[in-house]
View (tube, rainbow, N blue to C red):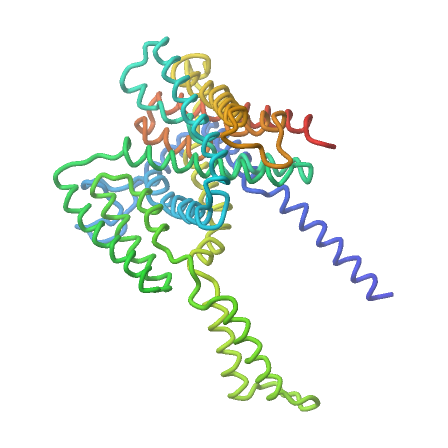
Length: 452
């Protein structure tokens, strides 16, 4: 009876744990953090929130600060956006490489549909921003935010999809994931081309970064599997990019592409080795003669098993596994806390004019229309076909979820407009409302069309 009681308690704990993990998915955490940030930014302690992110960060000596750009020390906000987010983009680069090697982007037939959908989700928001901006006579400074509504937040959109439970077809999740990854590639290219500043001095730093990048490629070819090797050189490349005027988060993506995807020991050899080591271990173990302290021979065998277990996982997968929770549950919420502080005061409250409305319409209307029309067109023209479990009804809902820009959109906004400016505040407001309405609309549409 006691064992049955313990078993029931274990099952109850497991059920509780699953429920907690379901409600604490990264997308929901981002919603909570954004709400808390908005409250703080508009509370009596809002000035302390702003002052904190304007504090300078220093690492080095009196004459040298590692966290500086052209002689200016990082603020806490720049540290998050330019340094911490490089880890986020490193993770994005790893996910992109994995998808290209073995995932949904590994073959033309698999990749063509989400690529076409992502192109629609990039082109339409940009067009809507430009058209609405032209109607409102945007200045050149305001037009710098034209790329903001092209972004899709992977964690946020998948988080909303997860809330619908097992009713969501696997093909729908895979389509949205692949779409968001292609969308990220578009964002990375945009950052590299349009948000970088080049000078003659940049060439020296860029040259050093290129040499170091070459060292990483050679290391990959020579099958150097040390994660420290890629991390240390990666940090130096990040610094060189920063000083060269290329946005340093791009370094994270490029370094990720050089990380080896093949393990030091293949799975077949590992299995054979494990069977042999376990056979030896069994021979050394005598039943009825149990000892607390293992013999030297047993320790040697167990050490060999441990070493080979580490080598059967590739550095690419090891990085992804180790960084996933850090990125999902620390880096992204930290970024949201640093950047979602929209101050609702005065004329800024009006979302139906200026940069706010252009971004709002770009995210909600542009992403939805672009993703749906380009996907529908590719199917009707027999360029591709909808995967099993997908139809045009649930495609409409997923297209709406594509309008959840949040993380990457906020990141692009911070690159487009000066920190603390009215334009940046308006952009953040457009992003928050556009992402919120897109998420709610997508959820309600999918909740209605998916099988109960």
